[in-house]
Length: 588
Ligand SMILES: [Zn+2]
Image (cartoon, rainbow, N blue to C red; front, side, top):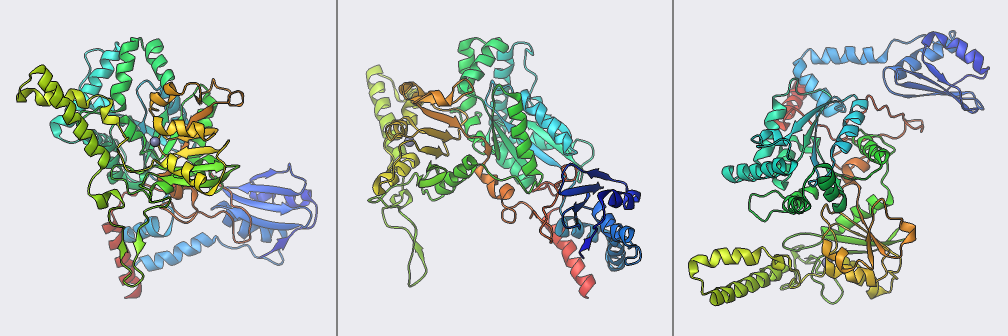
């Protein structure tokens, strides 16, 4: 129905005054009336009136405005919602109300009043409160109550609360011990679930449980299995200088102890040690920690707007390029990890790369037999076709060789072999990558440019991990201007070996005044949530609309905005049961 009003604005206001609401009169061309989520736009040049927005204001406007403006032509309508509710009531008389509620909540409508579980992963020495406080504040604006779950409270009390080093090392050791005693790297996640379960009202309520902090990838996997897409992991990045300084200057830790804490936190080699590096990579959202509080707040705001279905938040080019680097990584057949890279120039992707063996400048793509449709890989091509990881085999041989020679020169007996071998293993020999058959993703992308003559000078390279020292020197030599990486603990050897050519980007570095390659940590939505949060119809996120059927954009109301991927309290068995009952009662 199109309706026009061609008299003056004063007349319009007076005729609609009984509705209440608030007028926005700033624009010359459009006057806007807002009532309880509903929006009336009056276009002054054409007189056209158009309705949009949400219930109950939208219905109120649609039902009352035509009558108030033209009482002889339009009768005042009843609330259509009431009519719909009445017809639903007639149907549901045959079904249990629980069944209709399940169908309405899970299958027909968006699930808005949902709990959320937000995990935090941050390297030791990060002032996480400067992220957590604005996070809580912003969640409250979205109507959420926040509950803190502190993982350290699941562990025995340390012998000193005052001495930060003692407290932290005792917590770290206690965490390792509990993982070892139970033989379960995710045991603390079970404790987190127990804590959440014991907190008051559960189910359909706007409560965000903030879990601070997670230290092992198994904990993240465990919580994702319990809470599914309603679990979000936020990775906080802070550069090592800043963390070291915080530990020494603010927490009174000696510099040697600060170094030790940072090393242990990163990646303990022990079977049940904490592994912050691997945990960080699982994040749904990455935030870079710096001096600027406003920057942190605005970054969190963007993330929460996406989480709460703002239909107009799109990815920046950096986020898109990193997503493409992750997309590229999935073609890697490497036996240990998949790494991806892309090279961009003038906001365009010019090459992609993945860590994989390269046959003569191509890729060992999986092929399809045109006759049988069977998928196959070239014999002896990908590592799995060879049966082993050549780098791991070479490392083991070298470690064996050194251990045997040490045993001979120390005249050690066989009972001492394991201890000697452990010492050799704990050295940087275990970090060797030289004997792998794969070309690293960064080199793969650079060589793709070289093969077909694309300039890499002043280009940007995005990589899903921090480039190794070997790739770093080639990146510098190729003239790359900027490198964006995902990594909480950038390996220092690249920075130290090439301090003349690489500058880590921090707040103190003026990007315009350096000719060095800038290495910058990635921030924003991680690849695993890219489709869920940015796609309006694909991915696990609920579908969102950007315009009404008349082509006008829909208003986004943050106080009522539903989570894109809510936490559903019913299992698929309950929902399936409800759907089955509905089918039988309505069709039977
Ligand atoms: Zn490399």
